[in-house]
Length: 295
Image (cartoon, rainbow, N blue to C red; front, top):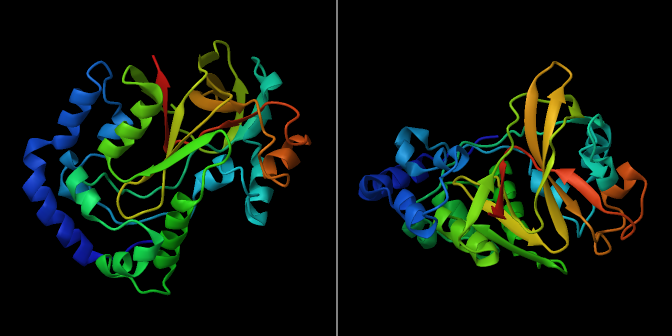
C-alpha cells in the first residue's frame, strides 16, 4: 500500500534543503552519544542520504502489535500465522540445537527521519487526524488514512504495569527516550538476518546481553516513527542462528519473566500451551527493530 502524497514530498524537499547542510541528526548523535558509533540501521534513516531517499510508501503489517502489545490478543489472522511460524519460545529452549521456523524479515516502508524541528512542527495525535490527512493529501476514508489512525491510536494507549512506552517522531526524541531509561553509555543492536522465512537452529555462543533494554519498532507512517518501550523483568539475548540453507545469522530475543499482565488470550499462550504468569516467555524481535542496551 502506498501513500500518494506528492504535496507532502514537496513540503519535505523545502525543509531538507534548508536543514540538510548541517546534518543536525548526526551532530546530535555525536553530542548525546559520543562513545556509541551510529549503527547502519539508523544511518540509513537519516535525511542526509538525500531527498531521493524519501519514500512516503507504507506497508500493511505492524509487527509490534503481534509481538510486543501484550495487553490485547493478536487478531485471528495473526494467531494462525504466528502459530505456524513459532516466533515465541520458552526461556528453557535457549540451548544450541533448538530448531524453530522463523520469519524475522518485515515488509516496511522506506520512510526516513524528519529533522527534529520539522517533526516537532507536525501534528501527531488522534485529535489532529483531519489536519494530518490534509497535510498528506489523503482522503478520510482511504486505506492509508486508516493505517495512520491505527498507528496514532497505538501510540496513545496507556502503558501496561511495568512498562514505559513512547512514540519517537525524530531521531533526537528516540535518543532522548532511550537514554532517559538507560543512560548515555549504551549500545544499539539490530538483527543480522538477511534471509526470509525458514527453519533455523540455535547455534553455539548465545549471549545474555542485558537485563534492561529499550526496544524500538519502526511503525507504518509516511516518515520514520518508532514505537519504543521498556519492560521490567525482561532479559535480552543475542542468539546465533544457522538456517536450513546453511546461512548464518544473529537475532535479538526478549524474555519476559512476568507475563501475568498479558491478555489471557494472547497468541503466545496458545503457541506455547502455557498460562499467564507461569513461566518466562521469549520472542524474537523483527528486522525493523533496534534494541538499546547499557554497555
